[in-house]
Length: 115
Image 1 (cartoon, rainbow, N blue to C red):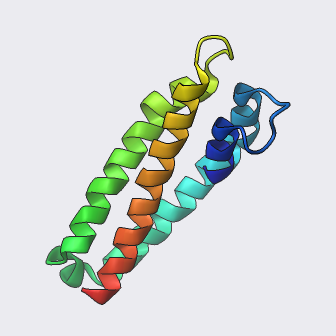
Image 2 (image 1 turned 90 degrees about the vertical axis):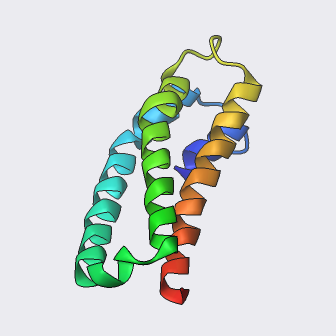
């Protein structure tokens, strides 16, 4: 997702269309999501009582829900659209929002261990 967001910024792979990069990275993104969700579920199952009262865990779950919802709706439409239909500012905003959502999931996850 970072590579795709960097492509939306125009930092990497400038010569390739956004939709081409999205198609090439799609299997990797889906595979990574499966691994992350499976390992997260296993971590949760091992300490469910601790997570139940944890505010960072609840924040992480909200951020994860928002990130997944955004990724499979708006973000996907933007990265699969033709080059002429989406402006550069829309691409940049989509990349920034995606990075903010996914990094907030990670940061909230780090907070679980400390609080």
